[in-house]
Length: 273
Image (cartoon, rainbow, N blue to C red; front, top):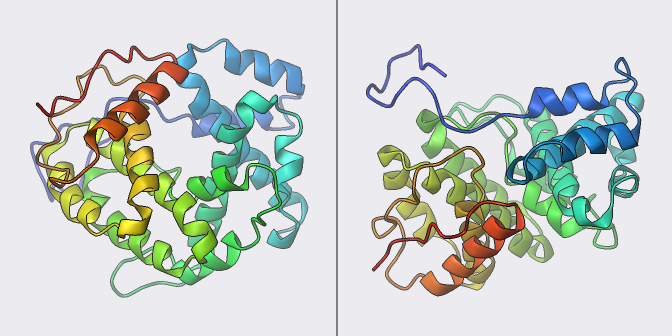
């Protein structure tokens, strides 16, 4: 992806990794007529590290079709109905994709902001409350609220941090830990790609995480470090990013769990020695 504004040079013309939005869209569009079994079989034909991204994309696309059928009535969005056709092992990722759709819808409903912020945190909070605590996998859908389905560009990192912190401040207390874990996952993925300008911006964001949410945040951060399909470079040295009191052992354990769960070699240890 090329930054045609040339505001920052020397960052490279592309980002390593994959963007599966269009792939997921094509799997669920009625024009192609795939059955649920055929959809799952095609997702499972990918290597394990890529399947979670596709399942999340399916959750986002299925939520989008619910909204289309209801002519934009978001009150009828039904997380349980989106999850029901999927095996329990895949529902967490599908629910995260559902949350991504809710976030993107909130951005579309938000008015213009003179500071350039694309999303009204009060709109996100209002939609998030619709993810009732008794809905299946609601906690994973709330994690998904922290993820934008657009490709994350380095030039937008500072703006995205402002947006995320504003959303977190508006969420009901019962949802904040789940959102913190999702936010940690997003920042872990961002750190893993190793762009120096990203790393410089992350330190302040991590230090501002409320102490009562740090456990959930760092669990997500570790998962994000282990969740970069297609990114073969080693995990960067994170001493410049993490505060001195960061729970390195817990972050590494979360990274190892996530990497092992999605089929990435977990031997790429975080180098903080």
